[in-house]
Image (cartoon, rainbow, N blue to C red; front, side, top):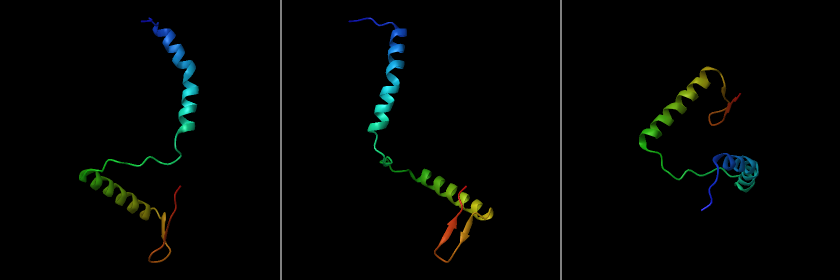
Length: 77
């Protein structure tokens, strides 16, 4: 078995790192990864509460404009 100095190994890794990162990015799908694990009930409740609070805050700040009964405009900054 060949012995390798840790400094030589680190140099080899640093030399190849940009090439490997480019390759990973190039071969990555442009689509978003799909979540396969189902959220547990507590996590769902927490996320729902956070979304409702964010919506109420946006309403108070005037970022949501109701155009009709079924249409609205959310002003993102």
